[in-house]
Image (cartoon, rainbow, N blue to C red; front, side):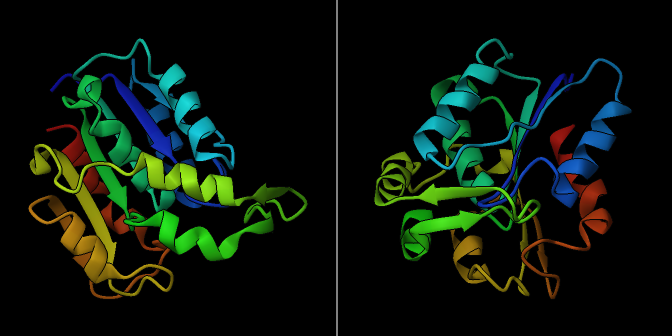
Length: 196
């Protein structure tokens, strides 16, 4: 495949400064002619998806890929299941499966992981927006997905992730953690999938 565009979507309370986002930006910088985008996503899921839609509006129907980590994996799936993006390759890293349920208990004033000075409000409206964004229960073309799932994830249930992304390419890691501190070890497989 002629791979020309790559989008990276970070997780909840994260940013383009996360280790995985920085690593993908480094890799993208070595690929001649590759358009790479990794936006800072706003707390509002509706605004986040609108921002992403604007960024990729003129991207090709094939030859593009999206990587999403945690909540970004949920967003990546919602994006990839839209008719205009069903030719894209997708990679999800410890993806959130039901963030409306999981994040309902985090309503309030929160700080960003990579900049504790950065505070934002997460509201009941944001939870409702997540519920409204939920992609269909059955993925179209599961084989275009690559799911990297860690049994050692301390925040999300690996069994739920595995069930959601059944039939997809990828790896289930015996240990690791939510942040995938061993991401580098698994990058070759992920890149092979995106470039297939």
